[in-house]
Image (cartoon, rainbow, N blue to C red):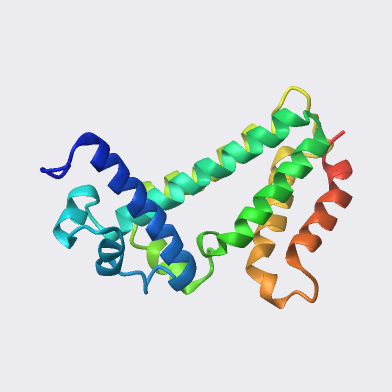
Length: 192
């Protein structure tokens, strides 16, 4: 960590970098998000930036990991409020809404996202992919839930529905309404 900063300052600066990175990623994409601009916006030197994160990709990786964690917290919160398949449906709708705000992080076919993803180490790419799969399995394996279909089929259906976010600009209707309709009509076919 950088010299000259207190522990509190280090924490605050790290949080600011992550917040600014996410905002810029949403607005400009990965390629056009500049470390110089991020540093200027939060008031640190570029040299100080590299004391907090080794590379631009390390910062973006932290952003995506924290965003994933936030999504898992949303799921757990919604499901704890309504411990049923309908609670899962509400959690999935909330996730889709979050995806629609941050689709830049989930449109894995987008060249801008691929530019970032391909710069990650094999281990980091694997970790992100596995975390998503494990998170979905964890959601499906609640004691109050019982699948009507094979678990892999359930995960595949949910993944297909969530990845429809990449087509939101091509839909004739609001994509959030489309997703809500799909989940409302499939939830009873997925769970007992």
